[in-house]
Length: 254
Image 1 (cartoon, rainbow, N blue to C red):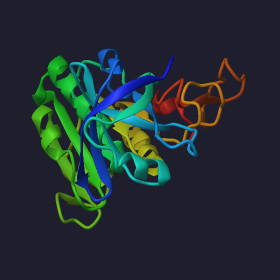
Image 2: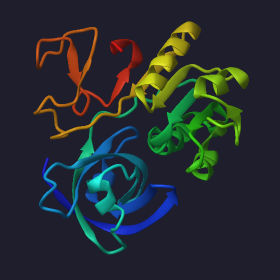
Image 3: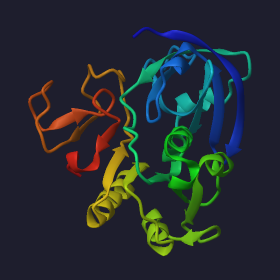
């Protein structure tokens, strides 16, 4: 893949430290739920791109929602409508959308990719068969978007909205059940969801978040432990950027 010059259509702050950016790009034509793009910041001192999950896709544009966590994303947050950025994408494999009732679970910055997934699943199996269980530390974001395509259940650490506790607490408290679970978020949450899904005999697909270097599978900087050997390296790991970021939960050795 080659770098592409993309145009920023809009950017706004939607929560504390969290920004939403719409960009015009040819990557939108092939983007699938669960994939990501590499974003290069306009600063020569920062050579590596920032991998950002795709939140929404519409016509020739896509939306990314990201948290400012370092110098690169801080620079990104200053960009305005009309600015240009270099990107590569779409990258990764994305979710394998099944028939049957869907449970979408997102935690923190793992929530954004659930929006495009909910949109696609609602078109495939009907909004009534899609339930989104979202976990927040405190301030909510993207709830309105998710409510367009699914029934939304919320968990917050302080109990200010919805269930007090984790997404597992929200799943149990609300009696959520389904045929396939799709999740993205921090590792402890994904591990707990793997165990929860296995206990109920539900298929579980998880999207792993990891720092990346090349984003195309060449550098082996973002490997995860797996139960089977990888054909590329002949050891029990896989590249999150190339083989993932979405995996069958039972394939990952947490």
